[in-house]
Length: 335
Ligand code: UFG
Image (tube, rainbow, N blue to C red; front, side):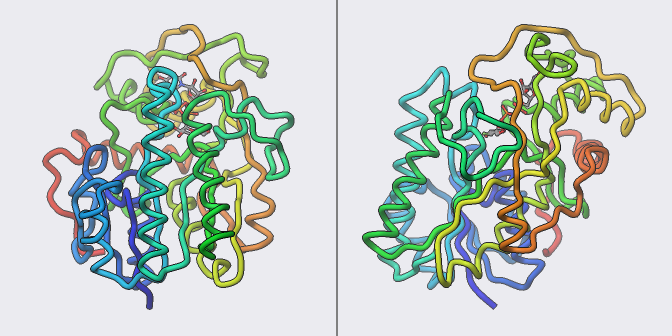
């Protein structure tokens, strides 16, 4: 069994990956400043080092719990919309954090790092589905920040021999099928949790951002991939780092429009999704759908929850079971 450092392990995708590592019997240390993550999302038996990833003293404390077989770096700012308002903060913070974590990884003697990257680095894609051959032309500072991070890792590989996996997530969605973790952002900006909360009457009607896209029903199309399947991909790329670095696009390969997601919530929840039609959101491409053919071929990754209704059901069940999200949640049962 191995030992892994997970930055951002109290956040949404990070916490589900911690569960996947623990389910496999691995030792895990989480490094998280809890600015977006939740203490209650860190399972019992997992050490939490609380602090910022770009703080040398905090990094020293985390790496003192090693040696680690690999570092999984999730901690980042990740909202396209926010990055259009605060471009410099996004570029600086995401690159600084990655550089500090990669530097500490190399200095600790570890040479393996997995980083959360994003579909947003493709900008307005040339063709759908998006494979790894497509050019990078981000249309948001968020996408640009992750492209810079990928480039920094490529230099760290050439100069320090750091092997890395960069996983370009499409739209992470859903919750742990066993109900141990879920999605809880503050403020929440993501489509599925907002649609669920609107249906439950916990929020105002959902605002549909744009109805004039060149898509079949005029609303934006995204590739929603179950967060547990995303987590599984992280485990599958680890053995590859013995011999090489990899970059993979990570999605289901099917696109669903905003209207189709609302309809899925209505089917699963049995209630209408109150909504209003609004203008486009700045920085949003019309369609983002992944080709994960390379990841599938090279790692055997296959999503367990490819169906939109199954993704929505796990998210719905978690939200109904946790009406306040993690607020007031007791520490989770041992993972
Ligand atoms: N949308 C709405 N109303 C809302 C929120 C979203 O209509 O209130 C629409 C968006 O316009 C988009 C779709 O729903 O068409 C999905 O939007 P999200 O905000 O849920 O997710 P994004 O596609 O903006 O971004 C997510 C992650 C990014 C990642 C990107 C990759 O937050 O980190 O997926 O596709 F880069």
